[in-house]
Image (cartoon, rainbow, N blue to C red; front, side, top):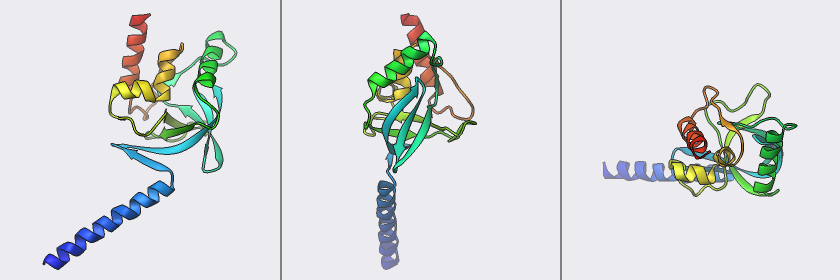
Length: 167
């Protein structure tokens, strides 16, 4: 019985090592219940969408949870400029997906984190390290919720309320 138990434990450990290696090779990272994919910032398209590179492929990303005015308006240009000045071409970022991964325009839907060592379950880290939340705090944009992607819905709404209270 002891021998079977040891074999089972060793098998489980080997499986975990294999999975860890696999996810590391795939550029995936885990932080609590959040799985992220490492990417490289290429360019802003506007205040709530951008182009990143994942595994040598350029991908257009639409940020979940926020909506900035369109470019061509004063507020839209402000949001676009904010993102362009906040990020640096070649900067390493981390995408976190929600339930639905693509929108009707075939853009990737994601939360973008500035690092993968913060606490993804802490609203203060969310406000400081989630680009979506940073844009909401720093520009004239609003929080939005499109089903089924609402993992951080309450936090976006809280940030927006605080932003309006502080004027």
